[in-house]
Each structure stands twice: as structure tokens, then as C-alpha cells.
Amino acid sequence: MAEVDVVIPVHGGLAALQRCVESVFAARCRTAHAIVVVDDGNADPQLKAYLGELASSGRVQVVVQEARQGLAASVNRAFDLHRDRDVVVLHSDALVAGDWLDRLARHAAARDVGVVATFTNSVGVATYPRPASANALPPGQTVFTLDAAFARANAGAAVALPAVDGPCLYFRRECVRVVGALDANPLGGDYGVETDFCLRAGSAGFRHLLAGDVFVGHDGHVSFGAREAESLAARAELALAKLYPSYPASRREVVEREPQRAFARRVDLLRLAESGRRLLVFVSHPWGGGIRRYMNDLAALTDARCEVLFLEPAAGDTVKLSWPRAGESFALYFTLPGDLPLLAETMRAIGVERLHFHHVHLQPRAILELPAVVGVPYDYTLHDYHPICPQYHLVAEDGRYCGEPDAAGCAACLARRPGQWGVDIATWRGAFARMLRGAARVIAPSQDVAARIRRYVPDLAIDVWPHPEEPAPAMPRVARVAILGNLSPEKGLHVVAACARDARERGLPLSFRVLGSTTEPIPQAPDAPLTIYGQYVDSELPQLIAAEKPDVLLFAAQVPETYAYTLSVALQSGLPIVASALGAFPERLAGAPRSTTVAWNAPPAQWNDALLAAALGARPGAVGTGAALAKVAR
Image (cartoon, rainbow, N blue to C red; front, side):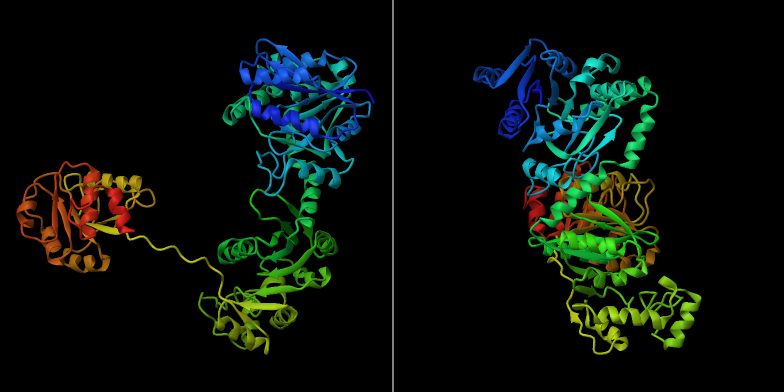
């Protein structure tokens, strides 16, 4: 086999380049190759020094472009170095592993192949674990282990695509000879030049491949920030659509068909099979709520030793087996009962040890056969009463408890409201009685649930285990501020709004409640710690204050009040009062032991400090800032 040039264009990113070159050195490939680094106008003296060391070592050929010319020009310069060699263009922030080049060269052996791409974790035609995403490497994985997984799971496999891109592209020399150089001019920049090349090559009869058995690590955008890269990519897509009118449709077809998905799923299955953890499958409905929280809590509790998959209904009689771990995208679909043997075979192949049933809502009836077909033990948690009632909650048509009538009453209910699977009550209860009796463990969260189920399945062993929950965090002490009466700007509307905003911004333990209405809309929860009660009858204000249980009452009038009946009610309540030092307020509050006045034009922080001090029973000047008061409150 002829020698291959591994070309690494570089402009900045010394540390990334060092890792990239070292990974090429460390890889063990039989394919003869030379490493060519194209210095694209670098000004970094440390990077220049490193390139000098590489050149002096004789292991790397360094080509210098004194001024920056961009990716396309750098690659074209490398294309012209040795016109009899295939060329691999490797981004300077990429990492390779194993015999990566041997595998790529095998894919490129066919005469009609133009360009071969690889899987990568970020920025490319096929990203893993999540498609079209900037992925971090999964926990516990390295570029070496992932590349080895791709090599084993997809040995020799590839798929043809109309165009490819990514951090590692193998260009066959014959394709370059026919198609010519990369061309950045029609696109207005380097973004998309590989796609443009592929589309031109396609017109010349070449096909392009995604190698399913090669994975290359990629740091992402070393030369461009993510936001700039996104903008440049969008511009390139518009230009490509103008140059090649059929390109958008072919791209959409690839996105919809996901030809790379099968390769990724094989790697998922291999990783699951070799995870070293016990594999559990939770069977449930596809919704959130308490059941999903319970499943997530169990998965978190067993995370150190178990890997959990979910088996949920998708549509009709199709179910989805998925990996709910953050950052993963594994999902396989099976239509039951026809695919039940395939589903069971898949579970056995990856080493599923146990099933755990949580619910069967929307599941096909064949789901009850799964434990026997897979041949593993299973648990059954009773989140509601579905094993004895197809309505799940023992609920009558009026939304209330049905009282658990006899079988005839249940049959009459089902006649009016058919349950899942369309079976009669005896068949339903018989199927679930067998299911429960066959479980290794039946789990109920309360004695009441266990007792009700045993009425229909006598002598059933049920473990009563309350749902696992993390201890609730200590509730912070929040001071409740009430403002009495209808609130207008004259009465302090804008002051109250500003105080609520300041409390939110500084994280103060204050909440504001207007006992009345406002003449203008102001931000309320969840945008601000403030709510409005609305209109009330004057004579009921004392009872309303008692019901609301505020810690402090606020009067923030911005004009001289002459009296204020609401202040009379406030004084009678015995609660702390914070009021404007304006008009009749100082006079009427004189001698009131739990009252404080604040300058009417004080900033909101000063108002809030006074409110916290009053609510906490401290002297207004006892603590210097609202932040310090907040610490005391907690």
C-alpha cells in the first residue's frame, strides 16, 4: 500500500496540537504514513518552538505559511506535496487511537471512494453518544476505549453519504486528482469546504463513506468559538444550497434516515454489556410524576453498582428500550408481540439481570410475558391499584373513591368505561394475580396499599417499603411582609416593587403580600417574591391579617399621610411595623414599641434591611447589611 500523508493544519492551540501529534505517534498502524504539520501563520512563540522541535526530530514535516491563509489553503498546500499519496486531514484538536489509519485505508481501498469520515464526539457528520451534538466523552470512557468499541462493534462496516465532514477525513488521491483542490471562495470562507468538495466529487462519480469502525476524539472549536462557528456554519449552509440546489433535500433525507444510528446503537449495546455493572430494566409508562421520580431515585441509589434502562410504550404496540443516563441517546424500538423474542434476545445479549415493573399503562398486553421470555427474575412496585382495577385508582365516574364494589359492580363500570386491553375484570385480575405471585418481590409504599391488594390476591407476600427520599433541606426562614390596603404610587406601589426586586437580586429571605389591589401591574411570583390578595371587606381586615400571619407590616407612602385607617388596624394587631418617616406616620407610631420609620425616599436596600430587622426582632442598626440579616434568618 502506498504511503499516506497525515496532514495537521494548525493555527493556535499549542496544547491541543501536542496532544494530537502525540496520539498519532502513539497509534500502532501498519499503513505507511508521514506526518505533515502546516503552520498557518502562527505567531505564538511557544508553538513555533514546538514546531521547530518536531521538524528537527525528523518525525514530522513542517510546512510554513508566513501569513494565515485558512484551512482550505493549508490543505491544498499539503495536497501538492506528494501527488501520489492519499491524504488524511486531521484537525489539530483531534485525537486518534489504535490502528485507526489501517481501518480508514481499508474503507478507502475501493476505486470509487472519494472521502472517508469517522465518528467523533463533537462537530462532524456523525457524533456520539448524541447525534448532532457537542458531546463530552461519557464518564469512564477515553478516546482509546471508545475507538476500540467502534472497531469491535462495527468491524469493516461503513455507510455511503452524499457528503461528509469532521475532524478526520481521508481523501483518496484519485478523487483529488479528478475534482481538484478545496475551494473556499464560493462559500466566503473555510466553513463547508469539505462538503463542497464532496458534492463536486459526487458529480464526478465518487461516493463518500462514514466509517462505522473508527472514532476520533475532538475538543471542538479551537480556532473559532462555538458561537462564531455556529454563525459560520449557517452561512456556509446557505451558500451550499445556492451552489447545489439538491443539497438541502439530500441533507434532510440523511437527517431523517439517520444511517449512522445503527453503528452508534451497536456501540451502546457493547458498552452496556461490558459496563461491569448489573443491568436492570424498569418497565413503566412514558410519563413523569411520582413514578418517574421513584424510578430516578432508585437509579441514583444504585448508580455505583447498577446500570438502569427504561422500557416504556412509544406508540401503539411499540415499546422503547432506552438508557436514561444523562448524555446518552441509546434507544431501540420493538413492536409486541412480534418482536418479543428479539427484545428478550437483546436483553440477554447485554446481560440484563432483573426487571422491575412499575406500571403497564399504554404498554401492550404482551409486556406481561416479558419476564418468562427473557428468563430473569423481576420485582413489582405497586404505585397504584392497577393490578385490581383497570381505572388504576379505584375511582368512580364522579372522580371519587368507588368503594370497591363486587365483581358485578366492577363489570358494570367497565362496560361504561372500558379499561386497557379490553378484557373483563376477571381476566384482568387473574393476569395480574399471576404476575404478582411470580415476582421475586412485590413492593408497596404503605400498609394500606398492601392490605387492599391482598383482598384480591390473598396470602401475597408484600414488602412495605416507603419510597426512598433524600432528607428534605432545612426550610429557610422567610420573613413575610404584608402591605395593607389598595396600593397606588402615592401609597408606595413603586417602593414595594423595588423592594421585591432587591430581595430577589440579593437573595434576601423576604416575601411581599399586598392585602388589597394595585392601581398598576407590578411583577409578581414567580418573577418577584410578591403576590396580591385583591379586594377585601374593611371589617374583615383583622381576620385577614390573622389568616395571612405576616411577620411585619409595611407602609411605604410617598406622600404625607393625614391619618390612615389601615395603620390603626396594624397597631391593633401588635405586629412589627415599618413605615415612611413622613406625614402622620411618625406621630402615630410614637411610643409603639415594635415600629420603625424609614426615610420616605430611602433606597430599596435600606427598606429591606429595616424589614428584616423588624421581622427578626433586631434593632434596625444591629446588623449592617441585608446579606448579614439573611444569614441570621437562615
